[in-house]
Length: 145
Image 1 (cartoon, rainbow, N blue to C red):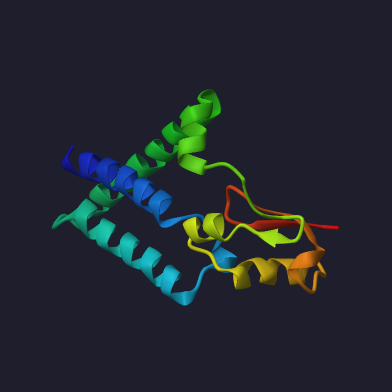
Image 2: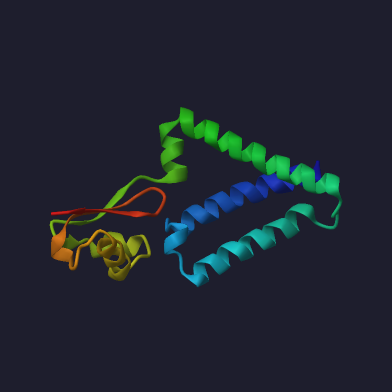
């Protein structure tokens, strides 16, 4: 039972922590950000399994995390406020060729991140962007003029 409680606490703690860290998609994360994610996972597993490294304990932890994930998914489907809390909402970071530096900074992103996404869509400079949106998954959607 101890493992189930620790796995549940770890799941929710990591969910909140990752939400606070921001929303960059895996493809946009720097090596430092990936390192932080791996370290969080490693630290969490230590706390979940503690000294009991048995197969049954590992199975209990895995199923507990899976059950929490299903629970979060079910809540997200039924409750829009919870969905927005967990997943966030799309955020406009540029419009009509102007970058909203304050919003971009709040997302812990820089204009170079925005321009990398713009170049993927064929835009050479910021003036060619009608609208740039950071999606819930951290990807940047660019609408060119």
